[in-house]
Length: 579
Image (tube, one colour):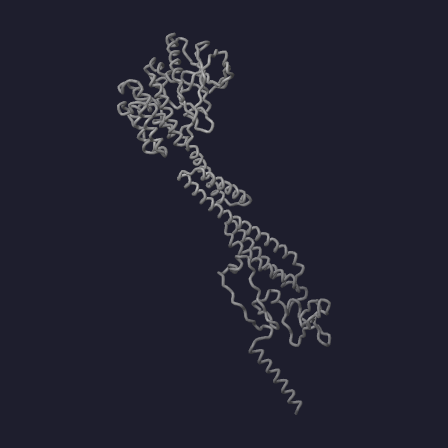
């Protein structure tokens, strides 16, 4: 009876255990509580990956197994523990290997008490001999293929500038790479080098993308700061503070150059384009600021003059040509004087062999008239002149070019002062009864002065009057600067008012970079006789007061012009004083 009870109790215990197992699931498949995870859009890696943070590993309480849906492929292919199997932990690194009902870490099969090998085949139930590594290899291949796909996707995202997404994809690939490494360590050691090589490739790509991303973000921020600094410099110039603007632009230019060097090793076409535009703007602002500093008071305190000397033609050493006019060739030359060697401009007049001797005498008189005028600061001085061996004049050497070469390049204040100085020279000639009558940009020359604006001086006063009186045509007169009465005597006689018109035409080009009328000579002549020039402010940023001054000087009718050069000078001076 006791035997039957014992048997019955054993059966009941067995049935009870079976029932418990059916109700709770297999002990091998017991689920453990999991931490809630964030959901990400399908096909995207977890949000943690964007910041390069590895997803948190799930902890499993002792005695429980990881649910099948959370196991790695290598774990899913491992056989379940058999009822009655035993597990003995190792005593330490030198202790005996642990034995389990499945394959032990040492590779020795588990056996029963009678020595029979009951461990499942490495590939799981039903795996044929020789296929022991097929399933781990296939799982690793799948992981490597997925990593390859991710690497390609990350590279494409990098090329289109989607750096954040590229980094997220790299992090996703890293997770797969760790799983592949675990599989290789557990069941396919012969694949570990291959997996590690793919991991190195992925890590190198991720580092490159991160460096490129950081550089792009840094350069973008710097260019935004540069644009802001250029705005500040622009405001400083507008407020009349060019010195501080130049200091700001110096720092900004260094920042532009530094940013250019920073991105030189990368391909950022949009940043390079923006950088070029900012560099051009910086240079433009620098030029404006420099003009602003030049436009502060820089009127020369002392204006140099050329001393008169007694020269022979043989005392002059002719040098390089400086220019050719309608009536003469001009050369740079040096002349030996009792006070040493001086620089001069040698003008050799071209006269026809058939020229009346009286004409030559008249020319000599005109040069003498010029010499009596050159005691003015703004008239080119004459050193000496003679008729032998040809008609020549040794003049003051003007080393800073002429107005034709510098029109529309000066700061407004300097241009205005240049105009005033020129009217003073013409006024000086008028006071001595001499009209120039061929004023043009080429006849306004400059001499440099240290630490101040270049000094303008009028050349050839009195020479052209004789030439014009010898001909009723406009030969020798520049049509673009000629007055209406020089084309048609119905507008009146040629006199000092003619110089007023010509000064208006020369100053028009000085401030705008173009003459009042342009085109072929006949077209210009018709315009001078019939049209009013456009206001100068249509071609440059100029005050309305200057429009009125220049258009008054350029009036077709002499009665509508300033009555004298003195009146024109006074209007220009008043405008200068108001600045």
